[in-house]
Amino acid sequence: MMANPNWLAVLAAAASAFALGGIWYGPLFKNVWCREAGIDPAAPSKRHPGAVFALAGVCSFVAALAFAAALPAEADLPRAVGFGALIGGGWVAMSFAINYAFAGRSLTLWLIDAGYHLLQFVLYGLILGAWR
Image 1 (cartoon, rainbow, N blue to C red):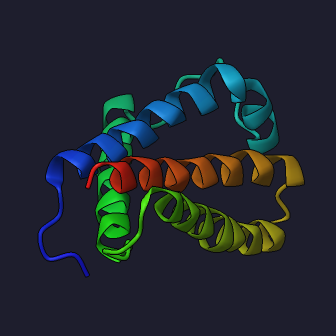
Image 2 (cartoon, rainbow, N blue to C red):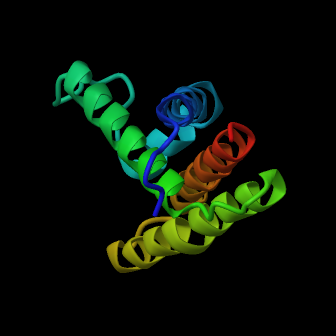
Image 3 (cartoon, helix red, strand yellow):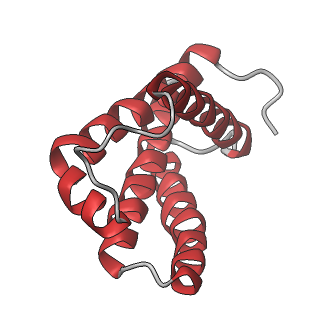
């Protein structure tokens, strides 16, 4: 575990996930994601957008901090990016796959959500691996 994290790098990594989410679930996949999730994109949200974004920001920060803590100290940039792919693709995406299988959610929805998390953790590896 990392005893003294680089707080600026952790904040930058968290911000990258937040920015990626804005692009991923905005112009790239919003309509398909909403259709597959059974959400009407034109309907008003049942939750306050500020609360949703605040929770997403906190969760992105916690995930980036946990990633920084788990990233081996000797990991160079390529290994940090590979570690991100392992976490995002091997753990997070596969955990989603289990839940989605039992919930009967579509492969398309899983591909969108799993793809986001794969890229999220690759970005964490890129930023935290480069900022050493």
